[in-house]
Length: 59
Image (cartoon, rainbow, N blue to C red):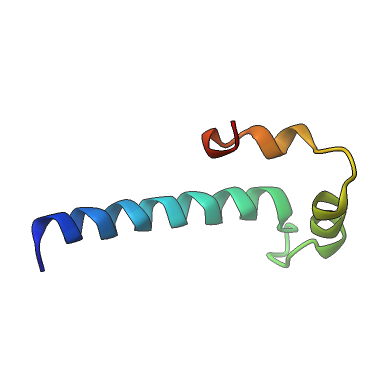
């Protein structure tokens, strides 16, 4: 595998881990289950929650 491909895959893995951790922190219950009510409320909000703009990708 080439150097650039390894670097790319490493970078992708880091971002996936970051987004997974952020999702877990925001939408998992203490039991480890997804808090579907909270997730659906966030996803269905008419006013965009401020949390949605935390990521630099959204700015």
